[in-house]
Image 1 (cartoon, rainbow, N blue to C red):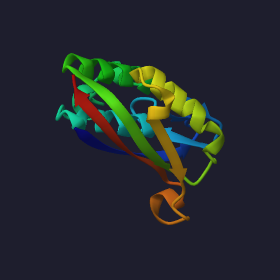
Image 2: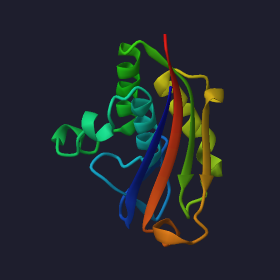
Image 3: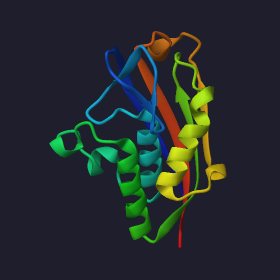
Image 4: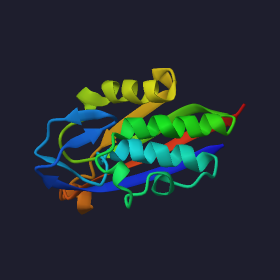
Length: 156
């Protein structure tokens, strides 16, 4: 089974930028109830979607104080346990981050390692790509960051 995920967060000065569980130096960070890690949020939605288990808003509602400032990697670990409890395992994850700055290539392997460890996958089964939007749209104006993910999950 395959699931697709998408997430977007507004960017603002004075906020922290966390992507793939890695804190990045940036003049802009995400505005969010949790740590605002759009990459991990998109991946969680893809994983949950593969098994028709809803989305992260269902499992981690932003109306609950317990999720304020929550570490998205910890949330991803919880999603992994949900998938295991359904009698399934993750085969692979493929994702793309859309962001004008900072450049992400130097951080991709660290992000892959954090995500792979969180869900018990070999790093070779976690793909992360980064692109800009060529200065077009809300991403191009540096108003926000977006991430897309697809995941394959199999029943045991």
